[in-house]
Amino acid sequence: MNIDDPKLTAYALDELDGAERAAIAHEAAASPEAQREIEETQTMARLLRKEFAAELSKEAPLRANLSDIRDDPWLWSIGDHCSLGCGRAGYHR
Image 1 (tube, helix red, strand yellow):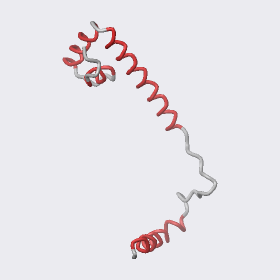
Image 2 (cartoon, rainbow, N blue to C red; image 1 turned 90 degrees about the vertical axis):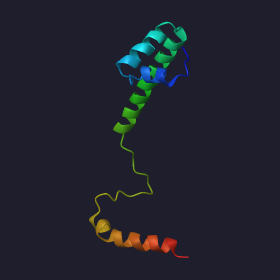
Image 3 (cartoon, helix red, strand yellow; image 1 turned 90 degrees about the horizontal axis):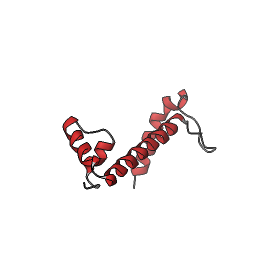
């Protein structure tokens, strides 16, 4: 079995339908190299999911030179006009 076949990765990530999954499973069963590749891909996917979930659960701290403006009513009432002026000034040559 060719371990560079994208279907092997799709198999490891449980992305194949029944017929393709069965065919790859049959081929992989006869190849220790393919079985190792499947295990490595599944392990890497688990680690990536775990790390991604950990990143999502963290809230990024505000840096010292930034202000939280999400709930500033003044900014949102006048900010539209300021952004138009700033944008226009940026394109003026």
